[in-house]
Amino acid sequence: MQKTRLNTLYEIICNNLSQTFSNPWRNLFLNLTSILAGFFIGQAIATIAGQESYWEITVGIILLIFTEVSSKVVYSKKKTKKKILWLETFNFFKMGIIYSLYIEALKLGS
View 1 (tube, helix red, strand yellow):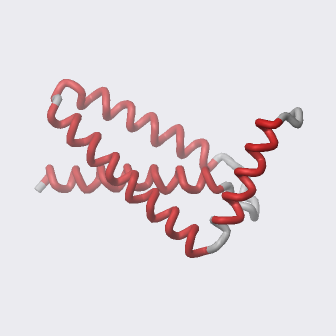
View 2 (tube, helix red, strand yellow):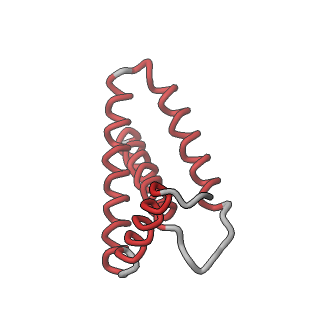
C-alpha cells in the first residue's frame, strides 16, 4: 500500500486504539459495551419486526445471514497471539444480538 496521508492517519488511529484497549479493564469495558449494544439492537429489531407482522420472515432471514456470515469471518481467521480489536468487538456485538433474540423467544414461548 502507498504511504499516503490517509493511510498514515489510519495506521496511527489503529495503533492508538490498540494501545488504549490493551489494558484489560478497558478491553472488558469495550466488550461489555458491545454485548449490551447488541442486546439493545436485537431487542429493537425484534420489537419492530413484531409490530409489523409482514416483516418477521424477512428480518429473520437477514439476521440469520448476518450471524452466519459474521461467524464465518470471525472464526475463519487463523489463531494468532495478537487479537484483532474490531473483530473481537464485532463478535461480542453479534453475541448480544443472539442473546437478545434467545430471550425474546423464551418470553414468547412462556
